[in-house]
Image 1: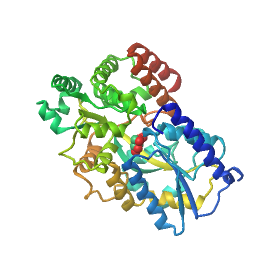
Image 2 (image 1 turned 30 degrees about the vertical axis):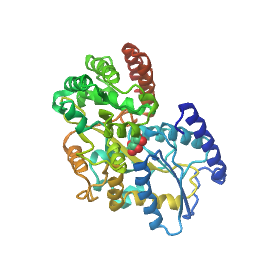
Image 3 (image 1 turned 135 degrees about the vertical axis):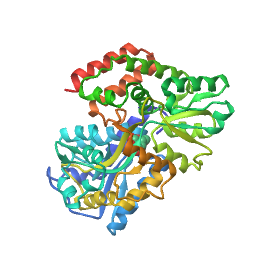
Image 4 (image 1 turned 90 degrees about the vertical axis):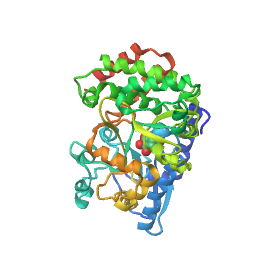
Length: 430
Ligand code: GAL
């Protein structure tokens, strides 16, 4: 599935068609009815890289332990950031043949599923289990739309982390200091270039990777408050800070590996750790992936928060919902959601994934120093939501952003980017 985007899409469509054929009986149930069986469970996600698959297996093993005899169909669709998986899911929802549960981001992306009447209201489950009291208020709120809960959170990722190769930086005699902001970062990257090493590893075969790089630069230039106002009104993509960020982005792109659109996020992270370049911007699922690849934190790779004028935590939440209609195995889906909200499972999952648990009742004392640091930062930094991951806004607005980033990568045309985003602010964020 890695040779071209078109191929990926057509394979995903074939996979969907065969999945529909396999689970076709589900579509025969009347709308709103719930199958009662606990023997089977089908879940979809985009967790297919080494660390993602291992972390997902923690959840699958957990639900199997809680429901003896359960067989779980892991229908993950490859493609980092999930664009392919969501496309496949949309086709199944349209066909009335949903899986029992699917991965999604809270807030904006969740709202799009709620507006479409596609996800079940889980408020009773939340109340019975008193889940809201076991997590930070911000996390609980992100799982709600209009005061009702529609999803459960499995973990909290940070999107704006700059992963670094200590040996490459020291050979070039360069240090990277978050406090020096984007100007300082660009200066350091140019020094790396002068030492004849590619400064930046980027893998944006799936466009979310460059969308995430650009958003890290934008939030560094605007600060957290103005970043939030981009989605609520009162701040424009036409501002001097955003335009500066776009110019910075073009500079950083020019300092990246030329084959960036041909490689995936995990390949780029590993290239950095193998010494092909000095830095890689990626969410902290890269931490899980580098551990999974046998790399040693602090030796093979290190990290700083993406340089900016304040400590911003770009929150990327992962969770699962269940369908509002035509759920094939309601009891098994219920057991799945409860497994996800088991503090022990959240800790075990985080250890493989690089995230921190959503539940504050989960023990993080044995998680890595990086994760301890991320947990502290999540509690005290300015927390904002990711646009690249459709959390800061609806899925529609995030898609406009992803498309505008793709166009910008090809054309370098900042004015066209600003024009399409300001237009979308007017028409899509009402
Ligand atoms: C994000 C997701 C992460 C990670 C990443 C790369 O959307 O939140 O858990 O999987 O995509 O695939």
